[in-house]
Image (cartoon, rainbow over all chains, first blue to last red):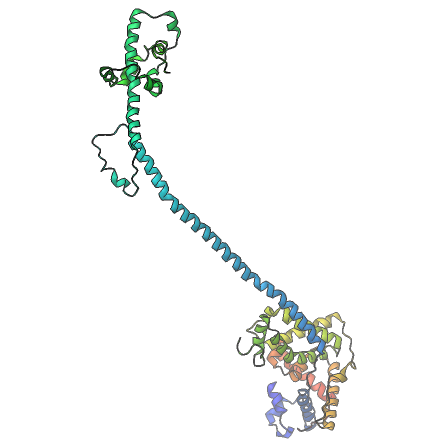
Amino acid sequence: MKQIDDLFLKAHYSDLTPSEQSVIEDLCSDEVSFQQVKVLVTRSKEVLPVNPPAHLLEALNQTFDQTYSQPSVQRMRPKMFNLFTASAVAASVLIFLTIYFFGTANAPQKQVATVEKKEQKKKNNPINLPGTSEQSQTPQLAAIDPIKAPSIEEDQVLQSEKVIDEPAAIASIEMEDAKQEWARGSRSDEDAVPVEDNVASNARKSNTYMWTSGDKHLSSEQAVLAEVSIKKQNKSDSKRLNTSFMLKQIKPVY
Amino acid sequence: MRGFKSGFSHFSDEELMLAIRQGEKTAFNELYQRYSGKLYGYMLKLLWYNEVRAQDLLQDLFAKIITQPHLFDANRSFKTWVYTIASNLCKNEFKRNEVRKNTSNGLDNHYHLSGTEDVEQTVTDWEFKEALDQELIKLDDKHREVFVLKHMDGLSIKEISEIVGINEGTVKSRLFYAIKKLAAELKMFELVER
């Protein structure tokens, strides 16, 4: 069709070649019809565009403002979402770091505390092997401030040893007395009192024996008797002990 | 965006559409200046010069450009796309049978006389254009549409086939029929050499 349009750019029908005339043969077959089509094709392109009224553009501009004022808020949403996301991530990281640093800061204190407890237990433990020296333990406590136990504790430890030994000695003495009493024969009311199996063990825990041991004026020989195996005596003699008799032997302290 | 933000005159139609997507009002105004006259004239001719309906459809068309610019495929020609929308809007109007042929409605307002030009030539042009419009109205819709797109809006056969949705051969045959019909009706006008 572009070729046909170009054909009508020529001035006269006679300017066309026979082949070109055959192309537009159906449209125009002579000079007159050629000019008619030429007028139509040429001048119809010269028709000026019709301008729409001005209020149409104003209405469209309002539409444009309304359309792109709302999306401006919507376009802020992703930014706000990113802001919220970033703040949430930052807060979580802050919380994590806070927990992490506080956790690491408290951990050495706990270790120190546990080591201190272990040290106290070791010092309070009466079963200290003579072969174990302090130097063998110092590397474990090298990073920790050495804790010097007060001298009072050492005395308490010695006293505790005495506390452990004194009731046993008393019990052994009382047992001998009980044997003598048993050889003489027991009273009927004394048999009514139930026999306690753990008299010696109970006596060991009681503080009254510690303070009453001075009143009994124990000799060194008697104290040596306390070093005898307590367990064997307890197993063999605890059933023979008469509690009521033993309670009578104990004098009150004022 | 290249160039100045306010100067979109050197932008292509497709670039203007991309700018409109980003909310550039100036780009929309530039696009409106380029196509509003052609589309309005096209719609007027297809709607038998019903100005009210043509203005409504033109507003709908540009409103669609504003609100739904994403519908435009940047790989496609904007000219073809916008004329396709205009053609479909007019076809929908045909189907509704709401368009009333009004041959004398507002034709005088569209053509402006310029004092600098030759008055005789201007009158001749005005007479020819008025007669052409009258004969276009008498044509069938399909022949009128093809002729307007080809000889008044300057679209190619291929573009017309895409807009109207027919093959190029059909476009040529319709165009041939329209030219022959109109030339016979407008034979009283002589060609003025310029």
